[in-house]
Image (tube, rainbow, N blue to C red; front, side):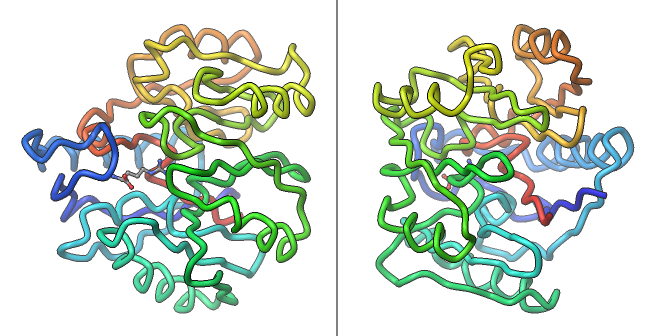
Length: 266
Ligand code: ARG
């Protein structure tokens, strides 16, 4: 069974602005955030059959809900993130605490090397892709590659709206890739094309990319995707995936959606 780490949105809010989606004036409606998050949990547990691990929310840490950024987990080892912005650096100790409490061997990077976890590191079983520049530092990848014995292809993120790799790049279980090409430079696009043949690449249209179409959770043949992305859902269905649309606009106010709210634990 696929296990996912999540954190309830008790203290979720827009208290600062660290990406172009966040506006302090665009306050989160707590009751809506809560029901949307519960809706996502219901789909993940009941329809997809994922195992959900909940970590306790912490007052004053509004973005702790985005557990994709906790770190990266492989087997019994967990590498904890080092956030770029001080506002989120305060989350590191809670994520670390959770990993230790669950008995993971906790690994860390050098202080000066930023790395925002599974938000910026995604891939297929043996090839990983790392998004950098907006949040993660490219200098983190050689260490990660060494630690986990995986090749990591660096992809520069050139559009501020797509500041984490998981906002514009979503590997699927069948080897296909859902992505928004304009978020990458020509070098990155060439690297993607070299690894993933054209028939496996699914380009998302811009109007759905900004509805976070790529911020989807794929578990086996199930894909949980933010509502408002009908064309992407159709492309996925054409390839044999079962899709589930989930309303998540309260989280989009913070620049996140389905995938950001989960961290794969295996
Ligand atoms: N407000 C959060 C931030 O800017 C959103 C994080 C979304 N996480 C993700 N994996 N894309 O850091």
